[in-house]
Amino acid sequence: MSKPPYHRDFKLGVLGGGQLGRMMQQEAVNLDIKLACLDPNADAPCAKIVPEFVVGSFNDEETVYNFGKDKDLITVEIEHVNTDALEELEQRGVAVYPQPHLLRMIQDKGLQKEFYQKNNIPSSAFQLIESKAEIEDANLKFPIFQKLRKSGYDGYGVQSLKDPHELSKAFDARWIDDADPQTMIVQRFCEGFAVDAGRFHTDMRILTCIALLKPGK
Image 1 (tube, one colour):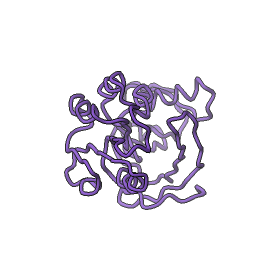
Image 2 (cartoon, one colour):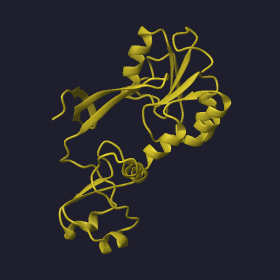
Image 3 (spheres, helix red, strand yellow):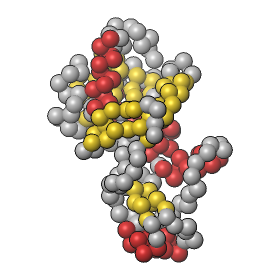
Image 4 (cartoon, one colour):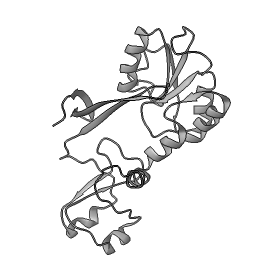
């Protein structure tokens, strides 16, 4: 970073301008940090409250690069962003958190599960399956949850398959309607240390996070 975060000219760029960005702006005001958001929706929650709001796709390489090149630090409020542009910005000297190589892993649920397995991080058993034909021949123990490797979020792209007769639903991108949403919050600081805030229950209404309740259920 070219300036410390507490410098009054410090520019923090956020890919995404939704409800999380809005909460971030509330804290940025307290710290006298100028927040800039990039979002494809001109009516996004951050549109009218941040010092700089840019309408554009955070999946487009050129758009992300041009947005970030005058920022001191870039972060995200959603993981589905263009990581090639973030790598270019990082090489240019812009700080990027989470780093692009970590975002690539976060974008792919299969890579996440393999990372957990390799590093002995407790996680549910899994199989990586590439097609409907392959899943029909797999040796599965029901009930199972089938999750899309990419583009899923907040229950989207997840299927509850209770028996082999439901395999026809596999790979359909749907919203799961019977999950108990849980989240873990970990604060990571640029200095390199992290604080685990523990497990929370997410109160979701009409696909919107209303509250985080602690402790989690």
